[in-house]
Image (cartoon, rainbow, N blue to C red; front, side, top):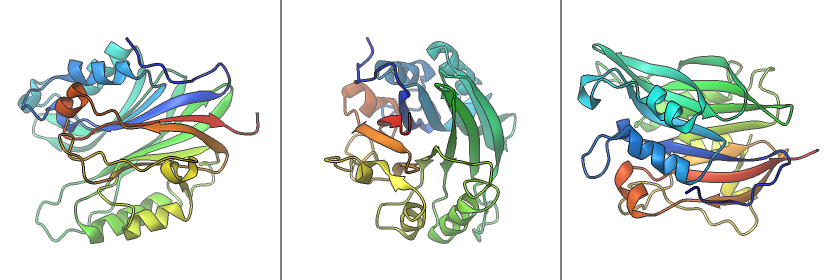
Length: 256
């Protein structure tokens, strides 16, 4: 049964950002269906997903993006951050509302490692009550210098700084950066952290799922989006389904 948030029939909707760790749970079990059940339990309209496997032996050669979206009866757009032998690994945006892919691509890699892990970004436009909402989903690197370069990409003219990325705008994902980081400060000068813009909201930690002590999964929004509530479910299922907990935000488009 879905968890009922206070959504009404106006331009109010629920977004979830969720790093699913290739659908490998903290118990070591690979289960896209369990991830789909976690998502379904909270009834989001939009889901930004990071770390999905598509056609990889290590996770049963399943197209995880398609399997999860099909189970949820959602449209989806997937972008591979990189290819691994026979398959792909990357991010997706799933939606109950009409959507289109605007752009998908790679972020800067400045690591000195011989084979640095590539990171991707996915920009979709989702129609909510006849209004176009720009949803940008990303997953930043593990190295501080790399993240700073990547956030400059995100805020630059190809992505959220693009003239086509007009408010309302949502930037979300796994930033591998806390609210004390230079990356966070750069973004928060342009967009609002949902926790800070929600009166009474208390920032919650999402990683690791079993005993979360770091807040590295974020949702940032433009000023024309009102935050109704934020929620991080800490249940037996969410603790076991992935190494991250999902972050759920209920919001409404202003200026109706």
